[in-house]
Amino acid sequence: MVQLKQVSLRLKSVKNIQKITKTMKMVSASKFTKAERELASARPFGYGPQKFYESSHLVAKVAKKDDKTKTDAPPEIPAEGAEGKDDKKVKRIYVAVTSDRGLCGGVHTGVSRRIRRSMTTRSADAAANRLVCVGDKSRAMLRRQYSENMLINVKDIGRIAPVFKDASTIAAAIVQSGYIYDIGEIYYNKYFSPVKYEMTIIPFFTKSKIEATPNMTAFDDVEDDQLESYSEWTFAALLFYALKESAASEQSARMAAMDNATKNADDMIRKLTLLFNRTRQAVITRELIEIISGAAAL
Image (tube, rainbow, N blue to C red):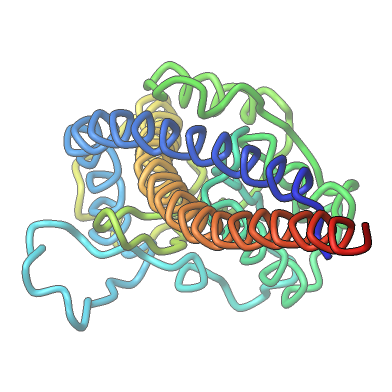
């Protein structure tokens, strides 16, 4: 028979955990409201460069099938649409946008799993495929298998809301690393609603790739330094956009995870309370039987 003290300690522990999860849900709800409000102003930073990539024919435009309400937002372009014919000769850089904090479902796991699948499919070697981990979660999941591919690791992401300075610092660190790549891919979670987010890939390109684009003649004459500055700003803008999308997705996922954890704790409390009452009644009954049996023996 289960001891009454063990059930009492377990019940007290679950109640304390429920208080923590309920508090975390309230905190996540507050941060989610702020992240969702800031995301609306950050989305033009991502839509502008993607429109430029479509207009210059760097990527092919992919039409949405069931998104009739969001006609003003350009579709996300998968990075595979920008691949060349000699895929193994293309130097790539993979940017995993996660954070340092967990307890938010499979937000970070989905990004790491997709990068792992892409690198496995392309038979990525360390010389031509480098990895940038934004956030400690992606680094912890990918460093064991792709430690040689690691280029830059960025920490202290997710504690406060990301700003454009964070994205520009990350972009500058990648540029200053000295690694010359042809195509870059940003893996992040795109926010749709408080109950929906999707793992998405957006490509970014270097100055040489933009100059060689087929439809670059449609634009006015652009000097080399201006084009280089624009390519660097485009990379930072896409990173800022991905950070904001990922932050909103993370807070919504954490809010849902803590809500589910609170409900599960409530179910456990009901079951443990029932078990506690039954165990206490059994102990009382057993003691009464012992007293009555002792009195009858006398």
